[in-house]
Structure formats: C-alpha cells, structure tokens
Image (cartoon, rainbow, N blue to C red; front, side, top):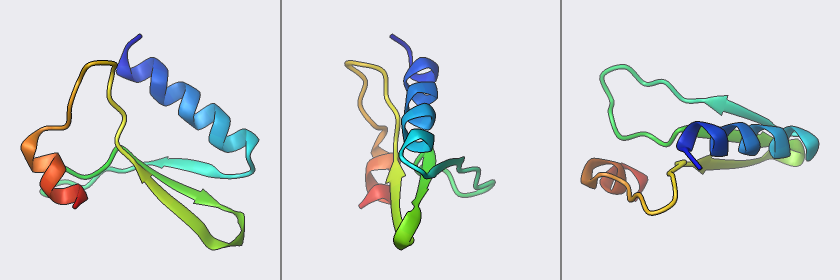
Length: 65
C-alpha cells in the first residue's frame, strides 16, 4: 500500500463525512502536513500521510510540533 493510495482513501472518507481534504502546498516552507481537513461546525485537522513503515523526516516532525 503506497502513500498515494492512502491519501485517496483519506479524501474519500473525509468527503463522506461532509468535509473536504485540501492538499497543502507551501512553496518555500517545507515540512508542512500533506492535507488540511475542513469539517462542518468549524472542525479542522492536519494530516501527514505515510506509507506503512515510513516515518516523518526530522523537518516534518519539527514543523508538526
């Protein structure tokens, strides 16, 4: 199972729950999460998608903190 497949499943499930999963693209600011999740009633979330067995890079871990 690769990261792209997991990300597609995430988008599908978020949409089914009434939300949107926006792809984050921050030129010049590496290490940001892959997706910004927006749900009804002002609920939000950030998601870093990784394939099984993979870990965030040190910069990603620092940004996510």
